[in-house]
Image 1 (cartoon, rainbow, N blue to C red):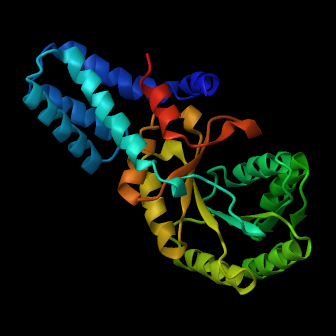
Image 2 (image 1 turned 90 degrees about the vertical axis):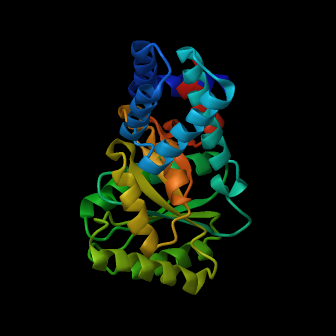
Length: 309
């Protein structure tokens, strides 16, 4: 764990500098504990993409601690603020269902959804390799039939992971491809099925409805599937990830979020706010290019990497 925390600390350095660095700077510049300092800290939290409501709640808790314990040292204010945020983060991710686990289902079906360009295909490829390396039989279904490039890219990742990919002609009905793909997986007695769907703008009604159609199609063969529906979002979009999740959740029952490109953004505070606002957990984080850089999200590790000096 310690080795990974060290790596994670390096990967989220931009977020740490933008978030913790600004908090420390504000506290050092103010030099005294007053309402102006609290208002500035609240603004920093909001700018770090934690979310307005949660930021206000955090500062209210901080204000209460300052009053109860009659705190006048600015250094102590930072310690308490970090402790409040850590507690919220860890508590929000304390449930077992917040973790991505392959349950006793065969095949266990994971459907991936999201807008274009968020890293959906690469996340599927990396996860396929993980499960393959664990000795599980994996089949990828290429249900993005709109773009030939999407199928080609997915095929490259399938080859890297050494897993079969089920595909049909470009332009075919995606729900039909999923139906045939799952039937193929059942016939092959596969352990895990990973479904790639077309990237879609979350404000395009017809495309969003199609996800509901795919969901119903899966249930025709595996009545309790999909077992996970993961929304892939780009961490660099910050609060826009929240609006995407809300709209996607209306068309599909989103069970978890894959937060990609966390290593390239100063907006990693979204990790803290996203579960609190949506009640949907971040289950996987992307912190680099290699398959090993798609990690299960661990709130304790993230908090340690964020706050540890």
